[in-house]
Image (tube, rainbow, N blue to C red):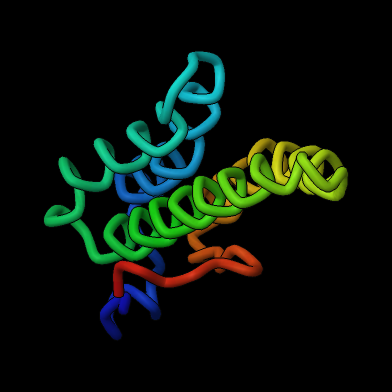
Length: 123
């Protein structure tokens, strides 16, 4: 978790920028095919996690969300065979665009955003 000193003064501007990038890197990955939406946040988090606890917390949260969305999309793709998967894929697609933007804005404001319905693989 974010240390006590930082919680009183808030993270510095540099930490806020990197934390925001952890979340928003997923949007760049959505433009390509494959799992770029996971690789972007993972790369930013792995490079910057040791520089600031705030970046570390936001990075873990972003990576956990993207892993959860990858699993949900795979399950939904299978469920397309019984029609419910189509609706699920649409909802997942909207979540993968909207929630990283919300999380990025919260990180810019110095808050750690907790994505809803996210499995916390990395603690």
